[in-house]
Length: 152
Image 1: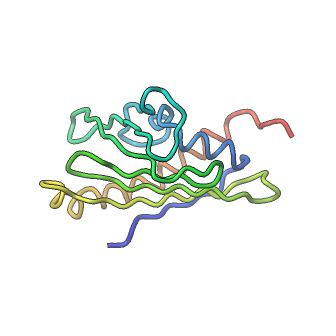
Image 2 (image 1 turned 90 degrees about the vertical axis):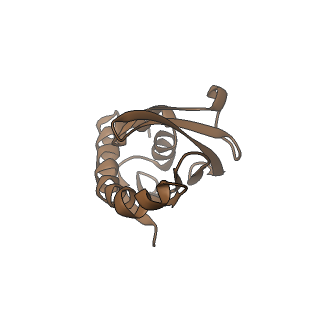
Image 3 (image 1 turned 135 degrees about the vertical axis):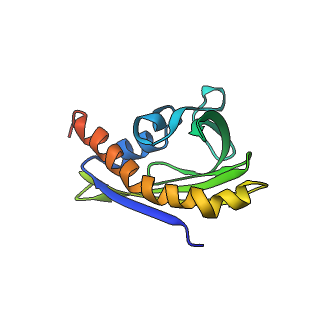
């Protein structure tokens, strides 16, 4: 199956969008079902570092670990799930628009099922992600555009 892609334009410079969207401690502010997140040891991300996200899955809080596979600020970031029955592959691209006064954010998500996840991915997870991704992007846009503009 094809990955799920969601894109939105945000009236903020690339670096502001990139560092907000890739900060696991902020995921709960704009992603449905996320309770919290952090980078391993509170460190800055780099390729190979681990990111832990706590999500509400099936009514319970579950911790999921991902590994950063791409880190090229302020334009691209990627993580791959490394544990659990449902492992997400997420790629983020941020492109400048209007001399970097605005940005286009594109998030691409795909899933790999392990064990029971092989059944859940096609039956539940992909359908839920297709519904949530556009709403998550709209929420992210609202939050970023509601903040004070950066100095010129």
